[in-house]
Length: 162
Length: 121
Image (cartoon, rainbow over the protein chains, first blue to last red):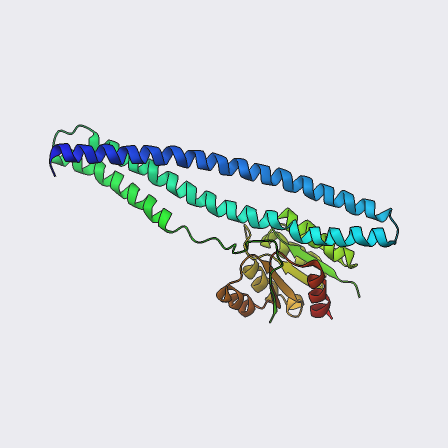
């Protein structure tokens, strides 16, 4: 490639790294905000659940009390959604953080490539460091595993006794 | 006969829902936030059943099962793994560690009570 083509490619890669970095930062913040909202809503739902259960004691043993009890039991299954969603968010956050690191390392690599050099021996050493850091970030991204959460609803899971 | 159940989970929602369901059925409940906390509480009480999550900080559920099974007083106590994971390989790992059963979240409260009655009979 010519020098001009190299420069164009560097600019393109640099622009992609900057855009990726910006969006990953925003996604990270949004995930944090979602986790805060989830934690707050879960705590309040659990408190309301326990308050309703305390009220149940005052209803005696009639049909109304039985209906409330059945609804609370059903709610005890569906309130478990917060654990499933929390685990999914944590996995997504790890993935976004790994992407964020790749974008940072990519930008550092492009900056190092653009830096003025006085000769090949001076140019080689810092670039090797940036490339290694970039490759490490890619390896960390590649190692992000699949989420353990497969559930798509709060339908009860299976039971297996050994 | 009512039992003393140790529940181990890093999710407050799961711990609180387990406690609600188990207490509704007349059982007593001790809660622990992770495997290490669970092991310490198991050592301090005479527990009839352990229900533990798998993925937790400090110590995971399968490591807790192995640690409990290494203790003479926990060799016959039923231990249920209650987790989001449902892969056959993980279940096999749990079974090999000495778990009594594998329950996938979310649990059905009525079925949980049936299982508790069955394994503690």
